[in-house]
Image (cartoon, rainbow, N blue to C red):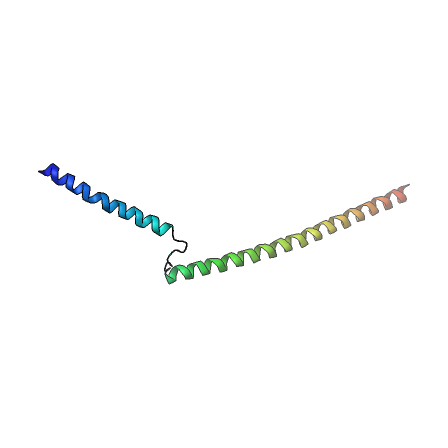
Length: 97
């Protein structure tokens, strides 16, 4: 008798599984999904992370501009030093020669 009960249960479960898969398919086939409620704490966290990301990008841009400017200054000073050194060498050559 136990085997008969098991068989009966299996036959009862089959339609349930079919209905469940049909329900999933029909939900997936919807073009518009139902709106999901997001907790306020997660919304605040997302907003905070967006602000941090924006601030980080602004900081990176500012640092890049500063690096470019400092690089220009460094090269101009190096060029000036080289010119002064060459001028001193020329002056020493003229004095000794």
